[in-house]
Image (tube, rainbow, N blue to C red; front, side):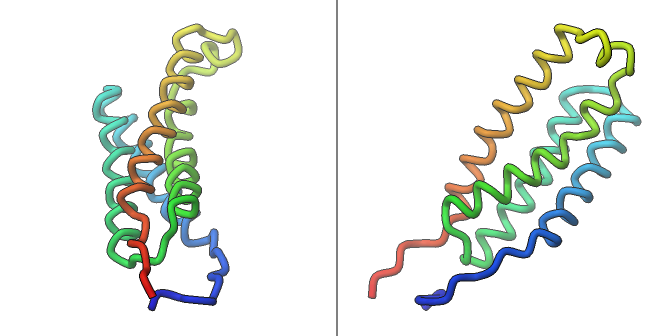
Length: 125
């Protein structure tokens, strides 16, 4: 019956571990290949694994799945900013600002798709 009257308390440590895992994978890919396609591909793969796990458990509503997937995406995309040279970050390079904006929009779209896939089915009682 899927927790009819029970509201599950969120454990953010679990999602923080997923974010750290994603950040480590992204950092490794970013330092080894330095190719944006592979970096974003690793981010998408981490979110795809998280989506599969959330869909498999069938305990997540749309809003909860969106919060979790966007949190993991944001935490996993930190190496994108950290692998850029410090000189570009300090002087506000236009390419860096566009890249961060593009990553944020991609994160929102990816989180929306992920939360739509991972949401639990409607319950008819």
